[in-house]
Structure formats: structure tokens, C-alpha cells
Length: 278
Image (tube, rainbow, N blue to C red; front, side, top):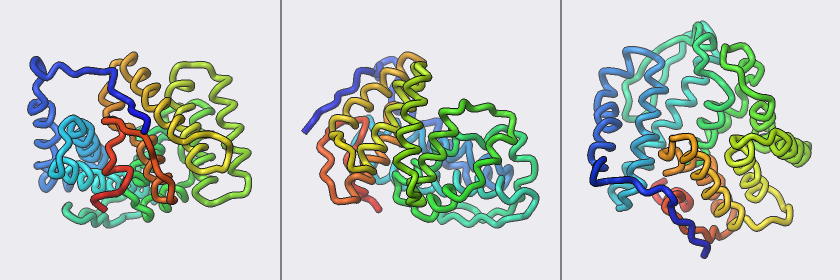
């Protein structure tokens, strides 16, 4: 078993975890009022579920673990629904998610907000993978990627290549290995910290989880959990490393495909990897 400890240490005396949990829980408690008010609340409130899950990773218990997992299941459907609104344009759609109010919206002008972009797509896809929401994964994998270039958010070519690679894997396309290698080469050539410590780590872990290439999945996962934390700490967002959605989702995929995952880390809670609360 490879153990990966946190490098980041939160000052719970100065910033009690109860205070950190209060804000996302308060936002979640107002779902009945806020979800029907504005369609963009699908994103903001799903973000509250993700934030809550990341903080709860510091307080492992069956109750907290189940609360976190159930919240991420809702968040995955909310994020997918927002992409489907954008895809549908001005066509009205009714969104029914268990435990949430039923709402009907259209996707008019969503692309102009910049909220639909490749980074958010990857967040949504790996979140769906983490909670084994195959229906949301299928919908996202069929999202017209050309729409990403119609919004005001400009993403680098490496990010677009990552999306194309993930879609190729999802659809079991014959050129998936070639796309994966080309994407990893482009990321390495980019040379920026984001590329090496974040994007490269995702693609390398995906390679280890989904191909027969001669790499040790446990070593790759352990290395990239530490690299993501390093990146997030440098950029002042260590909370993202409390729970790395892509890396832990890929560990869950590896587990579900019948392979043991021999990495122990508070940044990769076992109940996510094993799908304990499905």
C-alpha cells in the first residue's frame, strides 16, 4: 500500500471546520427557494455540494462520507443538466433531479455567459464518473464540442485535446491511444505548471487506468495526487486537492474494472474509489 499524506495543514484553531462547512450547507439548505429562481444556480449550488464534500474529507465518518457522496450525486446531475440546456439553445427543457424542485428552462444565451467551457466540461464529466452516473457521462460525451469555441472563455489547445481524448475513450474509438499520446506530448511541450502538474497528471492517470501500457497505476496515482496538491497550494486553492475529482474518479474506474487500488490517502477516500454508497 502506497501512502500519500497531505502536505497542506489547515489551521483548524484559527479557521474551525464548522465554519468552513456552514457556508455550503447553508446554500444547500436554500435549494427549494434558489433552484427555481435562476438556471445558473444549477452551477453555483452544485459547486456548494463539491465544496462540502471536499471539507468533509477532513472529517471521515460513515455519516459524513454518505452525506458527501449523496451531494456529489446531485451535483453531477445538476452540472450535466446545465450542459444540456446549453446544447438545446432556446428549446425549453424540464429538469427533474431527485430531491430537487422540478424546473423548466431554456438555454438561450448560456454560451455567451462563458460558463460552458472545456474546464467545466471536464469537471462535470469526471464528477459523473466519480459517482458512477453513466447517463450523465453519456450525455456529456455527446455534447457538441464545437460549442466550446462559441463562448467568450478561451481555452488552450491542450485543454481541447484533453476533451477530445476523453470523448474518444468514452466512445471506444479506435484512435483513442493515438489521441492520448498526442495530448500528453502537447501537454509536456507546453511546459507550464498547469500542464505538467495538473493536466499531465490527469492524462497520465487516465493512461494508467484505461490502457495496457506498461505503467504502474498505484505509483502514477500517488505521484499525481501529490503533484496536484503542490499545484493547488502554489496557486492558493488547496481546497481543490482535498478531493481531486478526476484522479479519484479514475481510481474508481480502475477499481470497477476489477483491479486493486493500493493507494491510501485522505485526498482519495476509499469510499469514493470503492463506490461504497452507490
